[in-house]
Length: 364
Ligand code: AVI
Image (cartoon, rainbow, N blue to C red):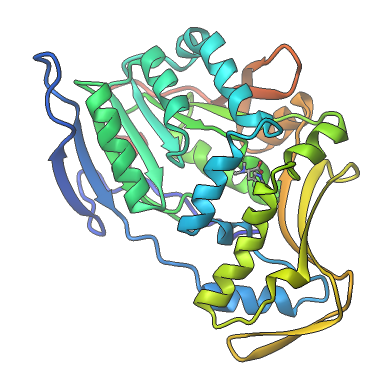
C-alpha cells in the first residue's frame, strides 16, 4: 500500500533537517511547573497525491490509498466513527488500557522515553502516560496542527513531562529527535493502524520500528482481532452512515484538489469482511456505467465496478505474533477484553539491550 523506507536514528545531537521551536506548554497549574514542549519539524514531503490517484484509478482493479481519507473533514469524520455504537475498536482498546495499564507499565518500564506513532486518541495516551510516567514523551504525527494541539494539552495535564513532538510521516523514511545516550526507548502504536498496511508493508514497518528501538526495546501495539463477520460488517457500515460519508469524502477531496468531476450520488459505500484475507475491505461502487474525469484524465466505470479504498486486517493472536517475530520482535504479553474483540501486544526487540552508558545505539 505505502512505500516504507528506512527509519533513521539522528546523528547524535544534530537535527540538520529539523526546524526546532521550543515552547512552554500550557501555563502553570497548582504551583507546579508545566511540561515543556519542543517541536521538531522534519517537513514530511507531501506524497504526489495526483500521480498516486491517477495510477490507482488507471489499474484494472481500481484502488485509492486510505491515506487520502484524512483531510480536515475526513479526520473529523474519523473522530465521529470512533464514537459510533457499532465501532467497537476505540472504546475496547481504551478499556484494555484502563484495566491493564499498570501491568503494561511493568513491562514497558517507567521513567523512560515513550514514542507514540501517530498522536491519535488523547484519551489512550493519557491513560498510558498516567501509568508509565515516562521521562520524555515523543509523539510522531504527519499533521502539525493536530500534533501541537495535543502536545500542549498533554503538557498542561502532565506537568514535568518533557515532550518532543516530531512532525514526520512514520509510514515513510523518518528521523526522530533522540539523544545519543537514550537507551531506554519504548513505543506505542495504538488503534490497530497496523491493520491498514498490507502484511508485507506491516512487517517492513515493524522491522524498522525494531531498528529504531534497538535490542531490548519494547513496543505496545493495538491489534484488532478476527470475529463474527456481522460485528465487523456493522462496524464498517454503520446505521447512521458516518463511515459511508468518510469513504465518499475521498471523492469530494479528489473533486476539490484534483479538479475531478465525481458525482457522489453515482457511487455507493460498500464494506465487507473478506474471510480468505482476514480483512475488512471498503469500496466505492459505481451505480451506473459512467466516465469520470480527474486532472484532465478520463476513467470509465461499469455499473457495479468498485474502487478499493481501504483494507483493515484482523489478526488472530498467534498470526500477529508470527508477523512480529518475522520483524525481529519477541512476544512478551497479550491483553484482550473479555469478549475477545481487540488485543494489545507487548513486543520486545530480539537481542540484548546494550549497557546504559553506550552511545552507539542512537547513532545513525
Ligand atoms: C484508522 N484505522 C485503524 C481504521 C480501521 O478501523 O481500519 C480506519 C477506519 N476505516 C473505517 N472505519 C475506521
